Image (cartoon, rainbow, N blue to C red; front, side):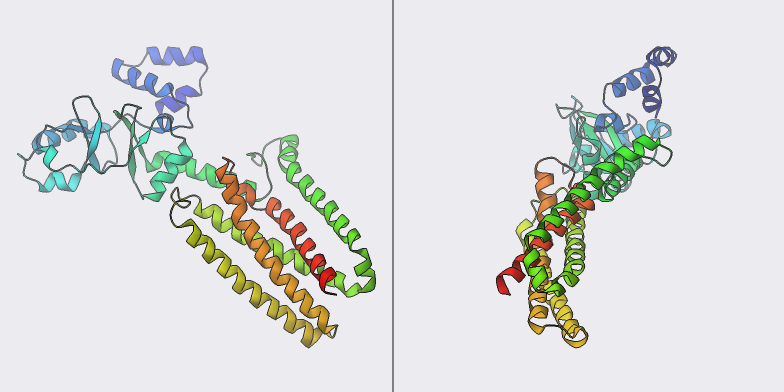
Length: 353
């Protein structure tokens, strides 16, 4: 916390405050100030309890007694060698239940998850969330233990990440607050609105291309809102599920093709059910052309499949190339699926009628 506060101060005032700190604390704060606030090194705290691998359990407990007033919320002791290289951990419960003469090397768990100081804070949060960790040790490039990050340290990161993704899904391109200037709020919202306008203009061109079909069968126009709304909704559902899943670092590696097959199976079932509902509604209460009703249902089925495909693949592609997959939600995916749905609808009608 001291390092975070000092980071916000002017350089001159920061130097004055550092000069007034005692030697150990000043050294720790200066070390933390070397790291960017958005990486593990900037999040970590120096307060932690370590034990040498050669110690006995009683030595380890004595160390806990010495450091306990400086360290809060710890659940394990980190085990290091003589070069301070992280080897593993010993749970507090195990220390209490083990004979005091037992060597630490005989009871510590070498299976330990750690992060390096340069890892981005969002990645740290993802790792801790994936493995449900209360705290995680931080090591340097040589594997030496330099600090730890607790769940309290990453709460703000998780909150900010969720807010950023929510804004992207809402079509806001910058991180904004309600009290920001009118110009900043306008600038944040305008880009995606412009993309929506461009998508609408392209839709007009689509309709113009198939104007002859519209003039021949005017009832075609009645189903355009249905096709576009369904495609947009399916796309947003699919992309939202994938965006949430990508928060798990192992999602792409763990059975990706099986997950995709499941998504498309769901899309086929939804497409069939929605098409049958629309067909039944048109035949029972529409009172229109039966052939057109069948064609609309076929087009709707194709739109559901295509929208599901786009909504699933787009966030995966964005994530692959280092972009925030949340971009694949909201206005972006809606505009794409509106155009795609309209194109499929008119092309189906043009080919069959």
